[in-house]
Image 1: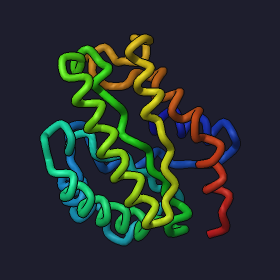
Image 2 (image 1 turned 90 degrees about the horizontal axis):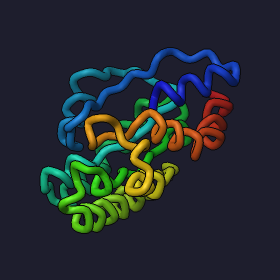
Image 3 (image 1 turned 90 degrees about the vertical axis):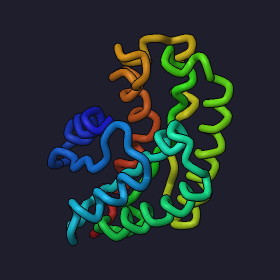
Image 4 (image 1 turned 180 degrees about the horizontal axis):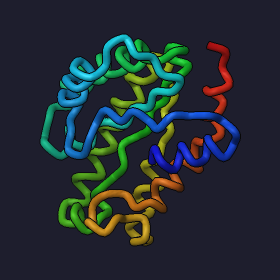
Length: 179
């Protein structure tokens, strides 16, 4: 997603550095919080994005722990944003139940992803952070296999492109905010 977003922003004439990606595949909110503590000092960024939670669901972590961790994640995101909450955006959790990897438990996964996304949206709202709902696009993969990467689990480049297309213009406006 980051590369597609960077290309789009650069094509609109913005000078941007490569994104600083903190999280990695397989991480829960706890992993992210530890990495923020270890890797970020007083650094500030024009844009901060948050997409976290699928591995909390996958690993069977409690939704209440997720809620409490998210509050800390969003506080950190705001702290590291040049423009506070106005420079932060959140992206909903995609539904991997529609992938070949998740097909056996698709209904359960979809239901739990919806529950985690509801908490995600509630907590983001508490911090006045906009959430872009890409979950419906992820669910199109059930009929559009080109939206799934070769590993039969992760989003393809095409899916990432569609996500960026969905919220690009709103996010671009965040770059126009006076620091």
